[in-house]
Image (tube, one colour):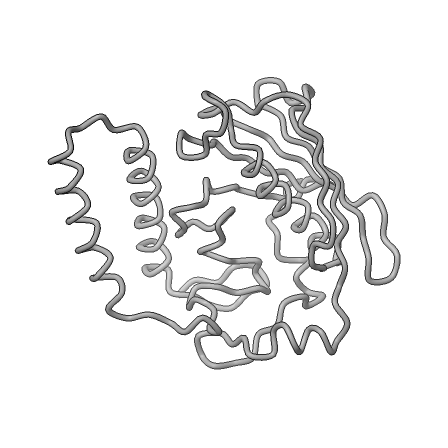
Length: 237
């Protein structure tokens, strides 16, 4: 068993296996959108994919149960479509706290293409929503997105190391405002995308309505938004 700082023990072998599968699935997705093999090979690959799907579907958790490896206290969501190491959809975005900012790094491959050679604008929005929300959590201000605004200043290139930054700029009561940017790692001061998000902590009755049925793998009720979430993000001196 392994334990993250501030979190619960988890099965390190299972984590390694989930991470390995996630990486393999992302490679598969990239290959599927760039392949030029003939139709017969595509049909054979589809049959193989259906066989793997059946194998994984043999045992599944209910939608109200968090994955066994997830721990909100340790800010660990292994199947997040943005940052999850086990997700076929995630780049994944790797985040850390640096001073008052949260910094993210990612490389977006051909599966994320919008205009030829560039990232789809909706993907940039998805990443910024995650990063801005994480910056709010890192500041002890967990909330749900109520507004997200983006200015697309320049197209974001595919298959290029990116650096994303976010920080809380305003906070009052249950509401906070977070701003952020996307740039390339090679030119971090040349902003490609700017974002501004407003996050609000739901009232207690809404939290119960939204998340009252959510449990962890042991059946324990596990709502989001615990104050200790602020200590969970890896911090860089």
